[in-house]
Each structure stands twice: as C-alpha cells, then as structure tokens.
Image (cartoon, rainbow, N blue to C red; front, side, top):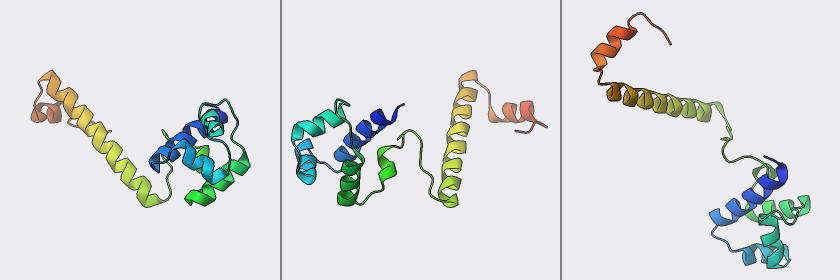
Length: 118
C-alpha cells in the first residue's frame, strides 16, 4: 500500500472515529470542504502541514496517518503479551473447531498427539 493511500484512508478513519463531517475538518484547517473530499479520495495530496495541524487539534501523533490499520501498533511488552495470548486462544479455538468437525473426541486427540510437541 502506498503512503498517499494510507494517509487518505487514515484521514477518513480518524475523522469518522471522532464523528466529524468533512466540513468540520475544513473549519479546523481553514480550507474548503471540497479539499477534504479530495484528500480522502486521493485526488488531492495531504501535506505535512495539514497532518501537523490535525495532530495538534486531535492530540495524536503524525504516525497515525501513515500506519496501516491492519497492523497493530505495540506500545509495550505487556500489550504484546496480551496480543499473543489472544492469538493463541484464537488458534486453539480454530483447532478445536476443526477437531469437532472431524468427529474426534478430546481424548482421541490427546492419544494421537501423545509425545508430540508444538
């Protein structure tokens, strides 16, 4: 994904998270509403100056405009540990669902996996 697309998608996402209309952002930046529309549709570039103004107004960091929302931003080890626990839980649930579809019992699974390690 290119940076221009990330900026556009994140501008729209950040605006919607704050329940703002394009006009509200235009008022903050003192520009036309059509300019905001152009930025969100990638017809108009989002300048660093624009990002700086919005970051100050919203109390966020500039990286939030260029980071992919599909990749979590890990701020500390505790948060990373929690994400890993949730991923393992999801993996285990998925594995359990597959086992149930095959009609195996947990005891049969334990027997099949006896002595195996992940």
